[in-house]
Image 1 (tube, helix red, strand yellow):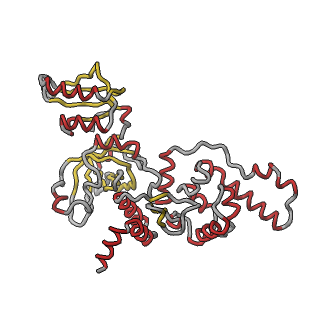
Image 2 (tube, helix red, strand yellow; image 1 turned 90 degrees about the horizontal axis):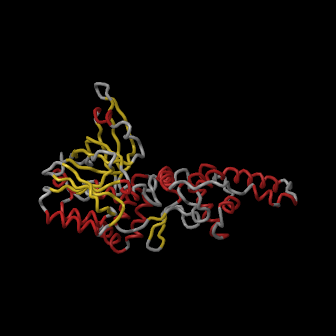
Image 3 (cartoon, rainbow, N blue to C red; image 1 turned 135 degrees about the horizontal axis):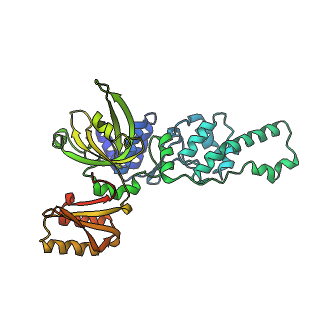
Length: 396
């Protein structure tokens, strides 16, 4: 009966169901991240924390879910209750200074404010996170001093002048790069919320990887289906996270890392010879391609035994390489050229002829490398015969 009710709620009230489900595991960051990934698969958007819209728990906002403030690292329920109460009594906060002046909670300390800034909770009223992080302590200290003066009746007419207002001004600081903002979000939320560092590499990953984590997820494949993938060589791409280095019995160093792509995470095992060879690349937050073979064991998530690593390079820095069986196949070459001419751009095209064992650069055609072009070429030549790669790097 319970299973039926759960299925009914998920089918007919998906936003409400997922909101309650995420709230129920707020103390477990890994579970929160897992369920938010499920929301993405259900086309339910989870909105970032907002000081004027978020409550302590996750909440329904139209057809979306709003992130709960108590799920932010270092932010406790008492201070969130004070924030929500002040907001209900006196309206939305106008800007960061207004927020600091109005919230007098003893639980609002510097760590709380820093976490709220990092997760983007003030973006709707003070959008420059770098500016807030650089200047929030000065503003808080000035407000505390003013409260003390008020308490002891020391405020004078001159304390309300522009000089006093300057104490509340934020420094002129450039905003963080998008990638840095996202990593700060992950620091305090356990996940990226306003975007993903891999979003700008989606095209590259689609072209140059053979699989992603959603395809090899235990939720999508049963054990027998997984077993068919075992020992098959694959290429996956993503951000390297959670690196652990351990000595072997021979005192050689090996590593265990996770690669996070746009869909999930896979554990990667790196034996000593591979770790030594690619040590300079195997660093946290690097965006990499990993070639290797899958290890499948029952009741365990699949693992990748790594054999090669390579840095992911933007397609704007790449050329397209096409492999053709024979230079004498005029009809196929004409079809390829006609397809390439539809996508004029600034990237070079190379044709590798298997019979000659030689590549030639096209002198007449340059292309805009995009998903449609890749799709058309893969239909003509097969996925394995179409590659986009940086000329300065060996293809993985």
